[in-house]
Image 1 (cartoon, rainbow, N blue to C red):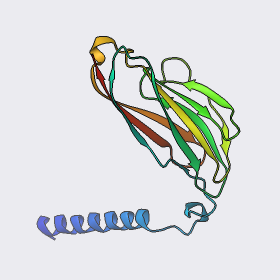
Image 2 (cartoon, rainbow, N blue to C red):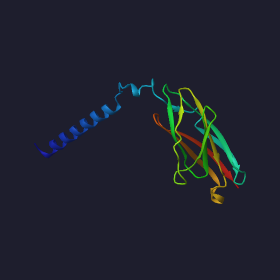
Image 3 (tube, rainbow, N blue to C red):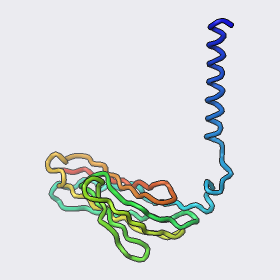
Image 4 (cartoon, rainbow, N blue to C red):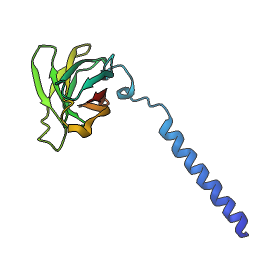
Length: 166
């Protein structure tokens, strides 16, 4: 067997191994955990909000995001945190109880929240932004993220944008 034939054979084997691995990974599972039925899912009708233009010395601005368990099983909210110290989030559960404020990891501890949302229950995450937090260097377009980690579903990421003006 010459080296050209050997090389071709190795390439064919590698392609077959890669295709086999890919087909196993992308094949639908019969596992009921992967089906929509019986699974919890945190969702929000609005995942992005634009505050528009605000003055750097105009004071804090806030917006509430409604979140709900759109799945068929109870869902535990484990952690809420933000992408920057200029942003905080407060949880208000379906019973009206609040938790927080929650901020950026590394700037104080991010405690677990352990709030349960039953199927179809709704809660609010009130996000507050301080346009003066970064001083004069904080002028311009800003985008911040709020992360909600759960025990059973994919994390939910909420986002807001703002244009900070002098």
